[in-house]
Image 1 (cartoon, rainbow, N blue to C red):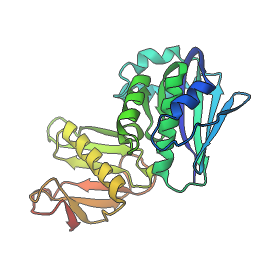
Image 2: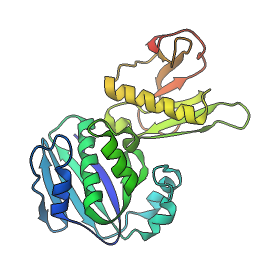
Image 3: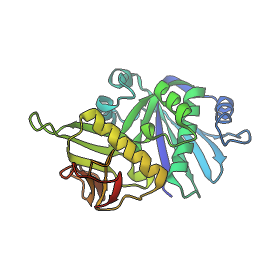
Length: 263
């Protein structure tokens, strides 16, 4: 399985305590024994189940040009654009191993990242590359503590939505981050939901998929009630995703149908 990676962005003089990291990591559900954290050069490592966690200190900032776009859209770090110029270095947190479940792998990555933030000094926040999303330290720690040991979808995936134009009343939306979790990204170009409702719908659908597996097939329909019919079409992405996506087609929305079924 491919590595799962998160980046912790650091101020000048930042550091992480080995003992503090081990102590905090031991507080998570499912950690049955104290963790022995090893150190070699600038890298801390420890094992958990079938996985190895490696935390590498990099003395240079994460490339600012790659963070400029996420800084403008990351709702979990509203002051990112003002805070990032203080960045002086970063840590690369990697989870690799023999496990075959990408969700369990990212749960461990979330635990390790939150423990680094809690035990470290000078940590600004996190860049979660799977979702191209920046997350402030406080937000990351609070959401990890709230959701774990369940999936932490708001930290792992970004759901973006906006108006198609100024006249039609239609909205567009797309997800970033579901593909690394083993699911197709969700997109739509003709939603009749408001921007906020569309974002909630995509999050609800993603949660359903994480809990139940890839049970929605090409041509299935879904909706919040029996009066609503939105068709799932598997197709290329109009938003530049690599690979096939689940396109929500609202053109036949107002027809009686179960929450999802065969169209």
